[in-house]
Image (cartoon, rainbow, N blue to C red):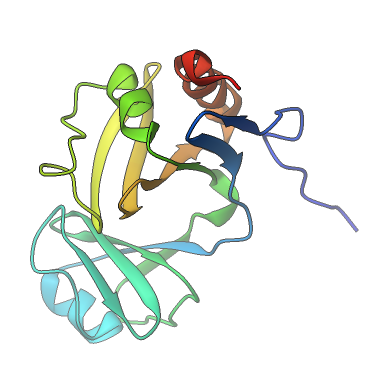
Length: 167
């Protein structure tokens, strides 16, 4: 039987001054697509608009566009809309610590100040010319979802931006 190997198998976790960067594996990510009515039928409650997160039934929903929702957590059987498993096509990188926002600000033109980018917010952007979704899930806790094929490149950009915080 084939065994999945992490796209970051050769990467070394970063632990520095008020900053840690590591892979955050073992997550379930599913994309649901359809009209508003179909998404509501399949998922029940859904985020009100693009860019909004909703926690419902132990799952996190991210409204990535008007007709698309990413669901983090156990997938839901949905006949009313199209569901696509994304877990194996994405790598999740965790950044934690007081210096996380400084590192992220070096990587993309987003205002990561805590008053502007709060917990339970996300943004779709690019890191090192690669699409990425950045999810703030705590005061200084973030997940970066990067396409598996570019995960190592994103990892290297993130850890390079963090070098000033090396222990």
